[in-house]
Structure formats: C-alpha cells, structure tokens
Image 1 (cartoon, each protein chain N blue to C red):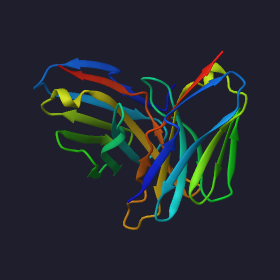
Image 2: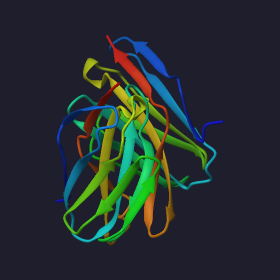
Image 3: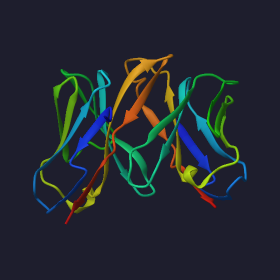
Image 4: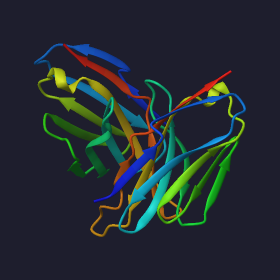
Amino acid sequence: EDQVTQSPEALRLQEGESSSLNCSYTVSGLRGLFWYRQDPGKGPEFLFTLYSAGEEKEKERLKATLTKKESFLHITAPKPEDSATYLCAVQARYSGGSNYKLTFGKGTLLTVNP
Amino acid sequence: DADVTQTPRNRITKTGKRIMLECSQTKGHDRMYWYRQDPGLGLQLIYYSFDVKDINKGEISDGYSVSRQAQAKFSLSLESAIPNQTALYFCATSGTSGGADTQYFGPGTRLTVL
C-alpha cells in the first residue's frame, strides 16, 4: 500500500528564516510526486511534479527536490504570504488503469510571522 | 476565469435532504474526480470518471452518487444527507503531462448537514 508521511505537522517561521518541509513516501514504482499549496477553506493549488530521483524544480521562493525515499520543499526567505498548508502526494505506476490514483499526506501547516 | 469551478461554494442543508454539487472545467481534460476533506483525515476520493461513459467508485462512495453530463461537467449527489457528510468537497480534473497525471482542483464546496 502506498504511504505518504509529511513532517513536521506544523512549522512556524519568522519572515526571512529559511527552512524545509519533508515528505517521506513508500510506493511500488513512482510515477510522480506532487506538491500542492492549500489556503484555509480553498482548493489545493498545484505547485510541482517531480518524476525521478535527483530532480529539482523551483518557483519563486520554493524549491522541491526528490530522492528515492523522500522529497523536500525548501522555502528560502519566506514571507507571510507563504503561510499555508503544503500537501505532498504520490502517484504509482500501476497496471490496469489504476495509475491515476493520488495518495496524499496530511500536510504541513506553515505559518510565517512578519 | 478559473479552470475548474464548483457550485455552490457553501451549502447548509438538513438531514435527509437530497443535494447536488456541480463541477465544470475548461481545461479540456477527460478525467474528473470528487474528493472530500475532513480535518485530520486528508483528502479522500469519492468517485472518479475517465470519460462520459466511465464512472468508478473511489475509497468512500457509500451515500454518494455522481453524473457525468458532458466531458466538462461532473456532478456529485447526496441522496439523503446525514451530519457526518459535513465536510469540504473538491472537484479535480487531470490530464497526462510528462508521464504523470497531474490533478487540478476546484475552489471547493463547504457543506454543512444539520
């Protein structure tokens, strides 16, 4: 069974204080690992897809990296507007048409104080 | 305009009532999904559809039904609402890009069943 564990559950940073969020996963053949941002009461907003170990992607102050067992979301010099819940999800290479399925972690609630 | 829209955005109903949540998308995707999100439980898949004639149950389909009226429209119905169906409901669509099936979420419907 695919599993995704995110840590920490909550992280409080001061503006400008860089840090990383962790996503550990277990999957039988990774098709893709996804990062989403979710603001309270709103739908998850797609950030990145990573496909293979060693891959990195960046968007503004965010940088996602991937190894064979985990992914990190690095936040450089965060601002208060980066406050949100960050969700990680994996998609496995299944046969028989099941390769659509996303297994989500429970998320990391990031708060950035001014 | 948003690529994935949901109506209504908020709904309060009473136990036993039938309600319908609607989802429309302009992304041109064939695949559409319905999820519910409860605090502490993460996102759970209710139903998914790969095209107009293909509808499948997800992890938690009991008490729900769906209708795919067109490629761009996917509705979720609660035949007889009960209080434990109080949750945030999200529609998502996906298309294959770069080898993975990236899902894009709508803004959500907050449903309260009294």
